[in-house]
Image (cartoon, rainbow over all chains, first blue to last red; front, side):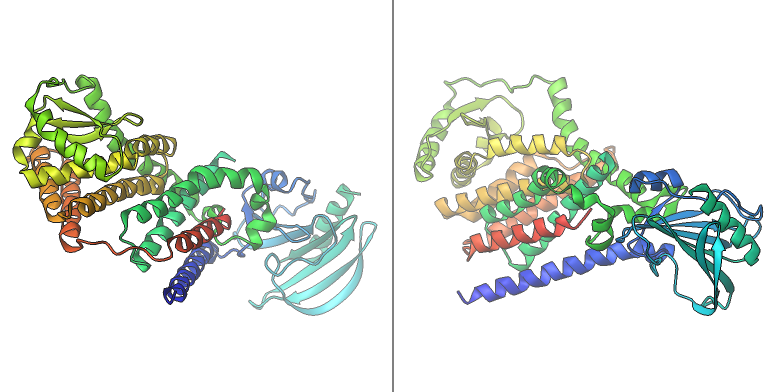
Length: 180
Length: 323
C-alpha cells in the first residue's frame, strides 16, 4: 500500500509534463508567425465565411493605394465571434487598414485582434446614418492612427487606419451603406 | 473533416504511444502481460477512442473549443509556411508517408513470399520421427499451462522453423533444422515458449494486429506501437516459458541459435536498408536474450488495475484536448 502514493506521484508528474509539452508545442507556430495565439487564421474571406457561417462585411470603397484581397483574416472565437481583415498598402506592403467586426453582438475588438493603443482625442461623428466614434490614437510603435467604430444591427464595426482621416470616413461610409 | 480525422489519428496515437512508453519506464514495468495491456491501450486510442470522440463530441472542432480549451491544435501549425504549403499539412503528409513505409516494410516480404512460393511449407508427414520427439514435451507443457496440446506439424524446410499458427485450432509448426540445432533443454524451453503463445491466444492477437496496421497504414505512431506490441507478446511468452521450465538461459540460447540460423548476416551486395534492418533485429534479439539472462524472475506488478485505470484516464483525457 505504501507504493500507491509513489505510483500516483509519478503519474501526476507525467500528466503534467505531457500537458505542458503539448501546450508549448501549440504555442510555437503563433510565436514564430507573430499572430495572436488562439485566433484562427484564414487565407480568404470565403473560407472565413464558411467557418463562421455568416457573411463578413467588406467596404465597397478602397483607396487605390491599398491591396486587395486582405493579407490575412483572423477569427477570434469570442463570444461574440470577431473577425479582423488585415489590408496592406500596395506600395510598401505595410498594414494600412484593419477592419474588425463582432458578428452576433456588439462588442469591442479583443486585444488579440486589435492591440490596445493610447487614445489622444475622441470625437463624435456620423457614418452614413449611424452615430460613430472617431479617435486619434498613438500606437506603441509611435505611429499616429485613426480608429472609427459604430454599432450596426448585431455587429460592431471598428476600422483602424493609417492614412488621411477623410479616406477612413469614406471607407467606413461605403461599408455602412452596403449593409443598411 | 477527413484531414482533421487523419491529423488527429496520428497526433492521438503519438501522444498515447509516448505517454504509455514513459509510464512503462517510470513505473519500471517488466511483466510482459501488463506491458501488453498498456500497449493495447495506446493502440485503442486511434482505433476506438478517436471515432467515439468524433461522434460523441463534435464540439471539439468548434472555434471556441479550439481557441480556449485545447492543449494542442494541429491546424495552428499551418500558420507557418514552407514552399507555399502549410507546415501542418506538410508534417501530416510526411508522417503519412513514414507510416505507409513502416507498414509496407513489414507487409511486403510475406506478401512477396506468398506470391513467389506456395503458401504452406510441405509437410514432412505424420510418420516423421521428429513428431515423436516433440509429443511428450508438448503434452507436459500443455498440462502445465492448462491447455489442450496443439497438433504438431513437421515441415520440410532448409531453415529452422518453430512457431504456432492458427487463431482457433493452434498448430505447432516445426522443421528438422530446428531439432538439429537445439539441444534437449533448449528445445524444451523453446516449445514451452510456443505453447505460451497458444495459451494466450497470441496467433489471434497477431491477426488482429495485422488488421489494425492495415487500417492505420498511414499512422507511423500506430505502426510503431504495433511493432513494440509484438515485442511485448514475445516477452510475455518468454516469461511464461522461463517460469514453467525454470530455465531462462536455455531459452536465451535457443533464441540466439534460431535467429543466427534463420537470419544470416547480409552480404555487401544487399541494399543498405536491409543491413540496417538486420542490425536492428539482431540488436533486438540480443536485448531479449540479455533480459532473459539477467532477470530470471520478473517481479510481480503491484496495483496493476489501479495503474491501468490511471493510464487510461490520462491517455484518454490528454487526447481529448488534442485536435
